[in-house]
Length: 130
Image (cartoon, rainbow, N blue to C red):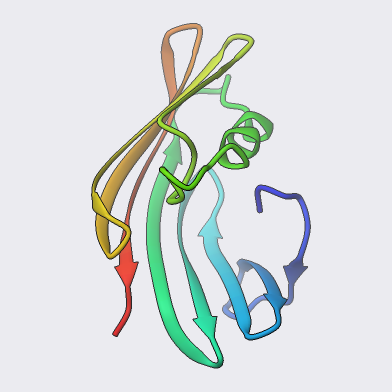
């Protein structure tokens, strides 16, 4: 989604799906909705599930920018690999993300502000699968 590529056929009615594979690794992201949405991303290694994360979010104001959200999500790093970085700002937009737990079991919340007005929010949780 954030990379603007790898969209695949829907796995469910009216879903948006993205998939990427490299060697033994398969990543799949699927979501439903638009301004209010819910989805899941998962990673398999050698055909065995390793990781999953669910997310639920919504657009709150017309000034929301999907391009800015994608830009922020591409800034994720090893410290914060869940969604985007803890803080990212570009122009009039600010992205904030907080997470409790670690990669094995976590929950978090991200929000976007435009000129100090909250325009988007998303809750997420996930971890290592066994």
